Length: 38
Image 1 (spheres, rainbow, N blue to C red):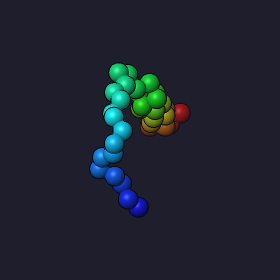
Image 2 (image 1 turned 60 degrees about the vertical axis):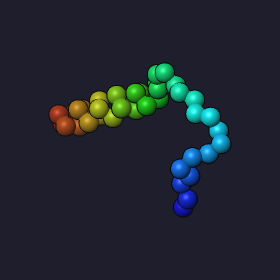
Image 3 (image 1 turned 45 degrees about the horizontal axis):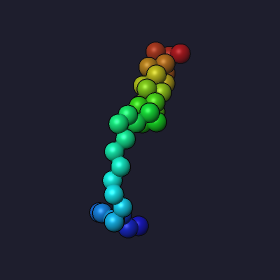
Image 4 (image 1 turned 60 degrees about the horizontal axis):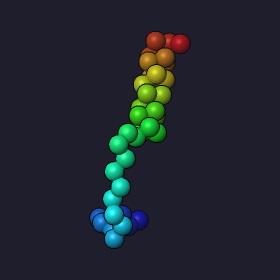
């Protein structure tokens, strides 16, 4: 598998990553629910 270090496309910065934050929140909630035994 080859992972490029750079390419010719310009980087676009997203101010707020909704999907990333959402996944972190969902994972934290699932962890807390299972850690409590629920």
